[in-house]
Image 1 (tube, rainbow, N blue to C red):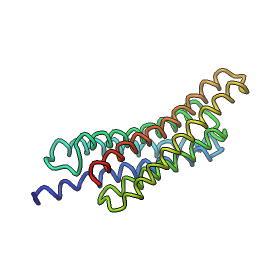
Image 2 (cartoon, rainbow, N blue to C red; image 1 turned 90 degrees about the horizontal axis):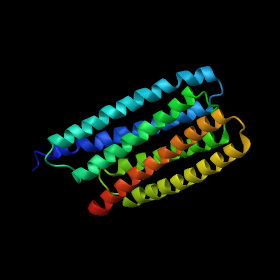
Image 3 (cartoon, one colour; image 1 turned 45 degrees about the vertical axis):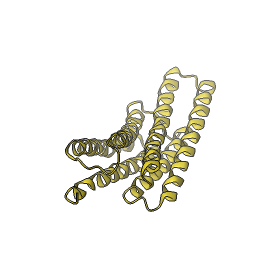
Length: 209
């Protein structure tokens, strides 16, 4: 059985890389949102795209290892679900940055600013929870992170709803309404994906902690 142990550990490193990428992407999205110069913003999306592609490759490696390894650190189904959830976080952060760029939306809008801050916090909590999966010695640290992710997702829901409502009542330009609403929604989706990852992690610790 010891022959299988070293390969079994590969999953933790891959999960940690994807979770770390997601948090870096969130920070880079926050930098885009803070940048007032539109020409500079246009050039700040490429690093996020590169990280999204890197996360895709890492996710593919997880699925490849899943097919190769007889021994896995936890259920194969949970490995698949967690890999997919973490990859979705990266996908939606990139989609948020891309929409801000393509639609020429002014990201200094309060709603976009606040959602960006929540995304940074939520991805940090996802990273914390994933890093603790390797040995599961500090279950309280994991569960606290999961509770905060759930709370942040609820906050993002409320902010998106409030600013979409405000958009319809105060914005006269129909194109601006459509563009900003899409940005609000895709940014809120990032926190949904963080919550999806948290739900998978919760399932794992219930089974194995």
